[in-house]
Image 1 (cartoon, rainbow, N blue to C red):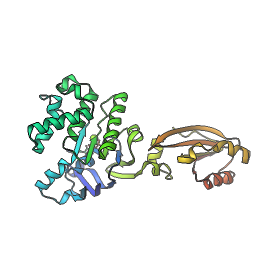
Image 2 (cartoon, helix red, strand yellow):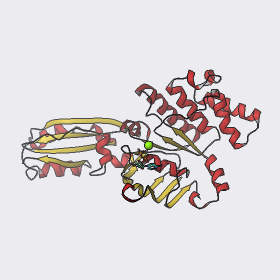
Image 3 (cartoon, rainbow, N blue to C red):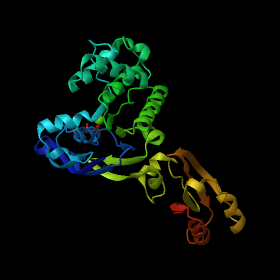
Image 4 (cartoon, protein in one colour):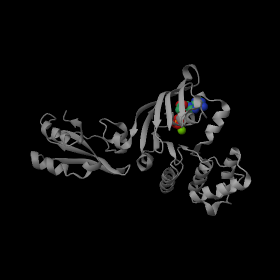
Length: 329
Ligand code: ADP
Ligand code: MG
């Protein structure tokens, strides 16, 4: 649905030059929720703004719904943008207009006639749960309600793609949760493809099907979450399942990643029984990701990695991802 190919974008000149995008390629499938995570300054906003060419990349191509936006005329681009809704961290609502007026404004731009605008606005306000606030103004709304208006406005012209730039970053955890639920609902109900950027791993965990990690303008990793989890050395998986600092060990520390069916196997008991190992559990996290149980367990086994070769091979033979995280020094 969205294909970014080799995007570059620099700001400034000489010693002040910043490579905001440094060869970014990304593929977002139709109907999925794709999250791009990265620290502040990583280039996330530049990336998402380049999807509808609010930010024009220096080189590379942007294709949305089969149309290469980097190759079309300005008039064609204006049309294409109607099919791409966008929500922002700070809502960007018109303060002089009511909630309904904000949504209707997006439809004026599209050229819908008045009665139709009103009908469509009320329909979309119902979808986002704001019917009773239709006549209120932005300063009478909570942050979560403001973002619902932002979402309603973005959806007004029936886009096929929704872009979200840190839409929940200004909201408290509970409100964040309700906005994410709403995004998930409209994704499912309307078949909307969602590209969101965030610095919060929790957002990814809660609603994303796929994710990418952006670092200094480069995509370090990307893929479906269920796949990332079982990818050896995945940094996204590590951040999704943080086990904290690795402690000193006198033996061997291993980390086992579970997903799907392997999540409920009694691995530790089995190790103890089969190999007579005195296994210590150093940490564990289990989450539901994309509807399946997944997690990581950090264990300490006595002895060197070589001495534990047989049990480790046994775990791997069961299809578990086992990484040696530490050993005695
Ligand atoms: P993020 O959204 O991940 O915090 P941004 O995409 O906003 O990152 O910014 C990436 C880098 O590009 C930063 O170093 C930022 O200062 C720089 N940058 C972004 N927009 C501009 C601009 N319009 N002019 C100059 N520098 C910019
Ligand atoms: Mg940003």
